[in-house]
Amino acid sequence: MPKIGMEPVRRRALIDAAISAVGERGTLNVTVSEIASRAGVSSALAHHYFGPKEELLFATMRQLLADLGSDCVAALKKAATPRQRVSAIISVNFNTGQFREETVHAWLAFYVEAQNSPHLRRLLRVYARRLHSNLASALADLVDRAEAARVAEAIAAMIDGLYIRRALRDGLPNPASATALVEDYVDAKLSRQVTRL
Amino acid sequence: MPKIGMEPVRRRALIDAAISAVGERGTLNVTVSEIASRAGVSSALAHHYFGPKEELLFATMRQLLADLGSDCVAALKKAATPRQRVSAIISVNFNTGQFREETVHAWLAFYVEAQNSPHLRRLLRVYARRLHSNLASALADLVDRAEAARVAEAIAAMIDGLYIRRALRDGLPNPASATALVEDYVDAKLSRQVTRL
DNA sequence: GGTTATTGATTGATCAGTCAATAAAAAATA
DNA sequence: TATTTTTTATTGACTGATCAATCAATAACC
Image (cartoon, rainbow over all chains, first blue to last red; front, side):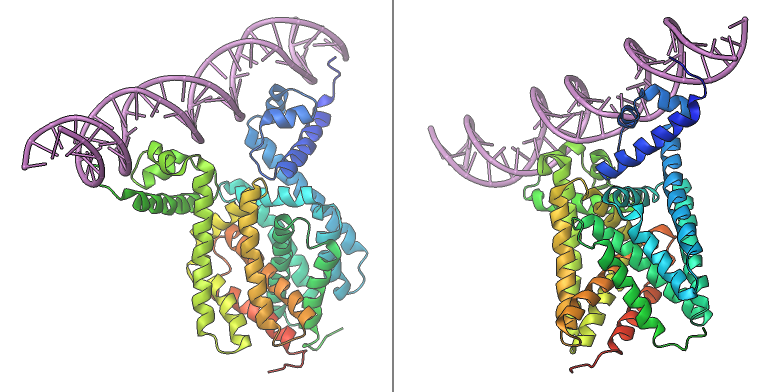
């Protein structure tokens, strides 16, 4: 059976399995066996490729971040104006795969685990900073720099908060209304400022 | 040694110990022994009073909610105008014991656990609904009803989001700036509306 | 013959939950 | 009042389950 070159295939399968297992259960308290069996392999193989369980979870988090990152890059590429760039970032968070129930639960689980694990914490901070800087740089063209930083923080908080509420109430804030809520905030803020473009 | 009438004392001590254990570790994955020893008793006693671990955690969550609730009632009592009532609610979330690092971590942990436990989910939903209705009723005097509901949702999301970010970055959004951010949003929204009061 | 893929079986640790035993307070009974 | 009985408080020791991690063994590849 051993076909060679299996390593990348298995790694990816295990990570995908981990995402779906964590997402479905809503917690990082999933067993290695559970993940492995979803990926169609034994738990021993999971350890063979990833070593300790933590390592597999780190890889999973990195994958989640990478997915969001590439969605974000793609969305920004299509945006022509600064205001559109802001909308693109908001939209990515609510309208791509990110806002699926499963993914939302996984994100939340990782957020909590980051409290314990400096490594996970660092990964999440990278995401938070990138989100913030993307927003702030788009906003910097629309309002003054200090205000841009503040608005970016508020938008980011609203996005995170809507994720939590999405996870809690069963699917209540749907993508469209979540997007509308954040956009409305942006409009409210921008309408009081002199736009530079 | 057995002094009678210990039950309420021990229950309270165990709940307090649970809050601080969960808060410090940032996860509900604390052992009954850990909680019990913080409370100065054996794990067997914890089981004696609360039965299964879950029950102790439910009681802990209920305590957290009750604390927030009474802080909220107290703050609302001092508010004279609708606008002040909105501010009071915002301020409670950021300026009382609620925004301490420990408490924030505990909240987050409970949020995640609620994904698995319908019972916890119900408890949290009560909190979310109360927050929303408090906000919406205050806002209903300032903007039209539909808009009030939307703004309330946005404020609630921002509050939750700032909690997450507070938990993630080490203490970055301090109470004052968190409050300012939300207040600024409220002002931005209200300034575009005809106030009725 | 060395490398890669794969697993079943095993080990060791951790924990939730139980239980029998101890002791003091309170209640019942003599 | 003196005694026995019941109730309440408390724990150490134990049990059973769960799981992460290891390892030796098997087999295909090159």
